[in-house]
Amino acid sequence: MYGKFLVEGDKLVRELLASNVKTDAIYALEGWKNANNSAKQEITLVSPSDLERISTHDSPNQVVAIADIPKHEAADLNLAPALYIALDQIQDPGNAGTIIRIADWFGINTVFFSEGSVDVYNPKVVSSAKGSLFRTACHYVNLAQLFEANKALPVYGTFMEGENIYKTELASQGFIVIGNEANGISQEVAGYVTNKISIPNFGKAESLNAAVATGIVVSEFKRK
Image (cartoon, rainbow, N blue to C red; front, top):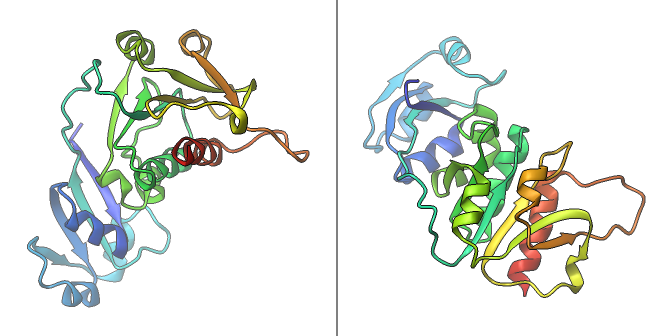
């Protein structure tokens, strides 16, 4: 509603200040303020008890900032050829933040979220993204419309019955679809998947965490 989000902790706030994301306000303990007095943004001094009231953490780390939610231009459904991550109904904030971090690590600049996915500016997402949120464009779109508009790009989806990813010829461009933590890729989105892939298991675990699976899959795309 207000177009703002919280950034909490020393390292994240310093990453925020180094990014292009606009900082609206900073509330910090005296030690942090003194150590960062060269920051261009005005810093408001607060007591430890005040910081606890502002923060969403039980033990806040020195500083909390309020930032403006980036106004990324509406996602152009006609995309330039590249590798993209598309998340279908991802609900867990920790998974979402970690996947954004994975995208940043592997040089994927854009992550698409299906409508109804977790809010990427949820404090838990911001925390788990570890600053990558400030460098990665996150768009909420209708995935079916996105794939329909980009039929030249292959759509890779993770399925238990998919082809072994270690034996699959992978393109350097396309969409990597990761499904909901409990239900996988939805039936509607599955209809657009052109290449079903899977991560083979060598033990007895029932499944992989969505973020862990994303890291394995993206690493394999980049390796090839």
